[in-house]
Length: 470
Image (spheres, rainbow, N blue to C red):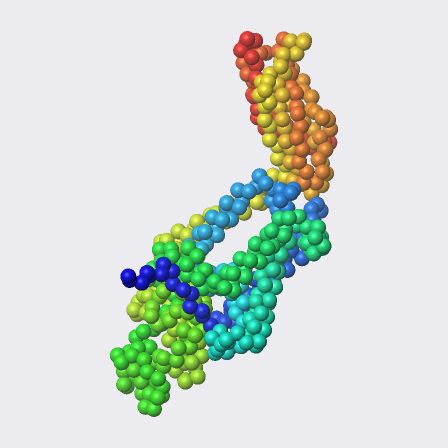
């Protein structure tokens, strides 16, 4: 009986080697800024006339998001759609021009994996030491190092999950409640879930997340073309006619290699050893590549040490590798840029012109009307008023375009709302006998600020008159 073929390949552990260079320094800078923003932002105070003194707070209970000076209410959720549209088009635009730079520099998976690898190197040593430790039996030394590694991973994962939770409550109080056992259950559940997923994704799965779980690796090719910047190996220079060769006697100087038609690649394998997903960039563009450019730093380090020109592996395009000119001003790239600017403009206009007062009116339809004892026709309306101002305001409600109408506001005629407060009121409007009742009438509820005659907001509604009275 033939051996059954496994459906899934067993994970081959990857032990990336450390490297220094321009792109590694850039990644460290982005890592530092991203971590500083993510972990410190909930703790940064922010002065507001009304609301919590926290820079960013997503208050689910009150249905308000506080982001610096901007307060986002539940009815402003369409702004999220605009933000997601901008993010999507920006991803398409950047990918079309610079490939997977988002994956290599800004993706959460990349940022947290970098920190986990730093912890590995700190506890277990450089690449060769980690390989030796992984293949050795479970001695006291191995148990100690692996336990310490996992403990530090768990601490980073826990603080990642807990910091995310802090965005959804007042950070100082939530911190105390969390560690004294008084925080709500969702805080513990969210922290536990993100701790587990961070530990698994950045510690145990790593490159498998980018290769198999992330859909971006699969559909990125649809956004690539011959002008897209990629991390590529210059095969013509690296291989020439006779391929690669070690820098042995007679082939130490670059000119000697050129004379013998041997490539500049000395086959040191450094570019493969530093790759976080374990690929060989010399085999061409591969969907696993996250364009982190660590192989560029590795190759440039070797080229500089043997006094060869750098750039054997570099950011380039297929057209440039073929000696052609790279054209970034293509129709699709311009289209993406225009779409991004248009959506950003509309979103910015919407935010800057948002109303500080909102009023919605709904006619009570059960019953649709009431006939009073004196023959008057009464309609009822439910009015919800949302005061978005950071101060208390008293409003006055009037009726416009309904002659001879009378109205009553319940529970009180004095509509006073505190800062960022909303409330619902019932308004009864009736027409006395003798008024024009030949057809339904359109009229407006007008909301004015107490002490002024300037209308702040209005809503047009219908006054229903039964057919028997028309």
